[in-house]
Image 1 (cartoon, rainbow, N blue to C red):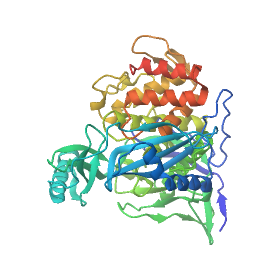
Image 2 (image 1 turned 90 degrees about the vertical axis):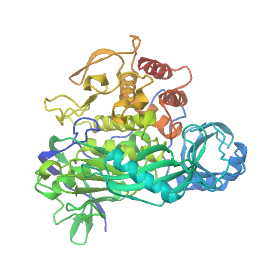
Image 3 (image 1 turned 135 degrees about the vertical axis):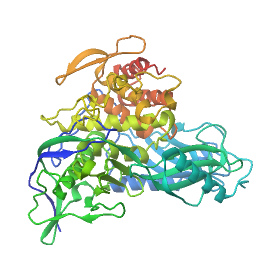
Image 4 (image 1 turned 180 degrees about the horizontal axis):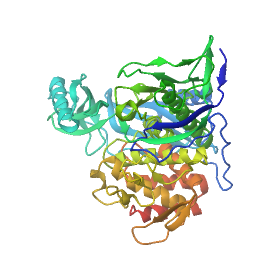
Length: 546
């Protein structure tokens, strides 16, 4: 069976719902013919290399073989061990190896670290999620696992309105993401939220007192609706006498039909002539066209701009499932199935299968595979902001003249009913809830609103402060101290954020840590005293992160 790129599929007037979390607008281009990555004239050797699957696997094997020696060199305790998670190699030979940690055989949540090694193997520096010594007085819990499970179920009902919550066996861990490392239970409660969204809520409970320490949900969602039109090309595959939505050119990505079910992998789409959809939502193929296309463009963006082959960097494609549930007004990324899932919207008339949905939600997968920013507090805002940043970046990357890239998030979905955007990167507070500038209350906000600080930073870094018009859209970005910020250009800003995320951020990075990570990334890429480093520092100061 030979992979094949389909004929152009005309998608006209399709009503598609875009996630409220996502970058605005739908861009329609050719997924199979992505532009070559731009070369940075000023860039130093800090640019990540494009690793083949075999080369990456070799680096992972090497790191695994030497992890005991690495742990010893870092001065870790005798009961601590390292678990290799990811590896990135820069053009100058620097290798960034990301590890998770165990203590006495127990997973250490918040104990992740990154070892930065020079060409030749010498350790240059280490980035740790916590600088606390990992130890607990005893690994024997005073609270029974069943008590932790019951407590976690109660948390799920109270905090998210969980329907029929089912708690899996509580897993004993060491909680090190905040405060003094503590023996704890990690209980996963599976349920369905009020709007029909599946939930896998992690509840962290002190194993000696029963006190709740933390909670976060694996499922990240979005809401809204928009419309777009145009012709797109899809990566398809011939299977016997029919074609399927299988893209071997992008890691074997598949798009399937859940047929209104809420479980399973879905049924493969097939077509006789490789012409997909009618452009109308009553044709089940139309939603599949949009989802498949969005996944393809997002794959191309990460590969061509950042040298990352797939969500996990391992060359393997994710999958997309469309027609989830009945009148489900949402879409979500799920690490457990490594997939994007889309509902059909109110009355099953507005599928949420738009390009910005894929770009934003699949970027949650990239974050999970790298820094794994906890979806709560300031790290939650950075997690959500990262998806907004790359959702916007993918929109610009597609270069669609019918819907050019912009910094207005959700301007097409009209979720407010008055044609106004959902969010504004140049001045986030214009939505009435997001933060323009960091303050001590930022971490207490919902991640969708605390993300305003990251979004505003990215806009300032890209375009600078003050009034201006970009692509026909007028912006006016303020700064916390009324200083003037000069932008360094979006292309450089994207590369700096990606490098910071994948090489210097950890699971509990806060905004101060994000400033440090992006300064390091800009230094690697452009030099210590470069205009780019000064731009990063100026942009963070502009949003009151010092």
